Length: 628
Image (cartoon, rainbow, N blue to C red; front, top):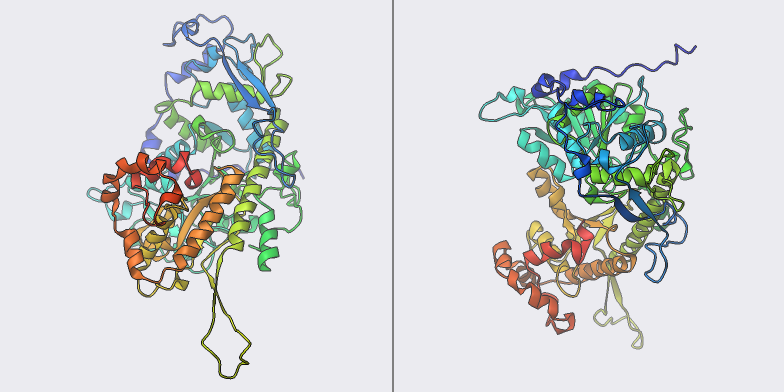
């Protein structure tokens, strides 16, 4: 009986390794590192600086305790007002720890020294355990996945495509040798821009409100069945953001994952799953859609609380919050064809530049060889402070202090509680922006008709025109709202080029009194064709980066700007908005300081005080980081 339930070993994916990956050998220098831990060894082999000469005696920081923020659906406390004493602790990484176990020893002597490519041993141990036991407890191949720490998801993706794809040069190589990568038809462009210079075919797949489509026109099956070999090899890689898809905020259901995974098995495709927003899943989005529009976003999601792990016959993560989240592709990865990218950028801070890859051990081993001769490992400062925050000091002569009030670490339960609190804060922001935009998406115009000979003299009539200016899907996950501008309802739609309307509206949003910066949809179009066909219809709004009072203000300004724009009936007003190209805007960059000193009520019109391109870029994060 036990043999019948035994999991299969992951499949050999080495036929997908690049030529360079196949030629890599383990670092001879790194092979010495396993001997460094032998007690009393006289280490004269490694070229290591003396840790007594490091200029740092300790590394300290005041940090939050895990329950600083309240989970959904409690009343928000985010962030604590300045008059309140924030719930905080003080983390301390000592210079030396007497802990003999290198997997628990957290100090600057080890963290700031050369280390292993796998990652700082204590933090690597925590992440590996968390990934296997809590985050992905039901990976269906034998032995489970392995992890390796990275300098963030961008670094993880760069190493993954280096491992799994060959560089192709149009002037040197046959077209039949060109490899390809699949992605959503709107995608996170940093990843696409990393793949394209390698000569990879970038192949978009149609999406719906959940994310990538398995079937239907433009869906994954349709793309693969109709593949034209004159363009090169059928793609063997897929890059996808499945939880809070960037930029659309779609959430791929478990049912859809199984459909797409089956197609990837059939066509032998490796799935690179980039999910920085996995813990930001919003059950209230489906309910809001049902309440305001009479329909749910997708029928593939349960309307009541649901345990994805145990309901499918698997093991619980040990935490109701984690069990309630749609699981990763790893949960159905019987072949070992999923490479998962995670990051601390959204759970701690982007400046950490710290993340990890989860995949079958053989793939991780190849990525480790790439790491040994490139980044080697992430910053020791960052790894040690996060390790101390979460794990805390050991009981063996350790002078460190962790992130809990009593000086111990957060541990797994504190880490999960922190994530749950973050989800609560971001979900409330999503609700605020979405509700504001939902209320304002129609332009209501009243007008009195000409006199009606059949109406009594004392009766007046009004004609009400109701025009929908935009639409959106309630964000099921992530940090963004994907706004669909309904330009076909604009009075000048048939008189002005559609892309000019799109850019004119974007410029109007940046002017007084609105002063809101949103991300144009064409930025997320992986091909020029999609930018031309669809990209100009969309804008991405980030509800995560600004405080709640500012978020309400900016959301109201978006509604007001749309109303203003939809009342423009003269083509000359559109031309006036567009009269300055980027070069002219750059030439006016010196006006930034002067313009910022002039109050909005001194502006003769919303159009007359247009910020320069430099002003837009420089202030995008500090003044109004809604574009983040």
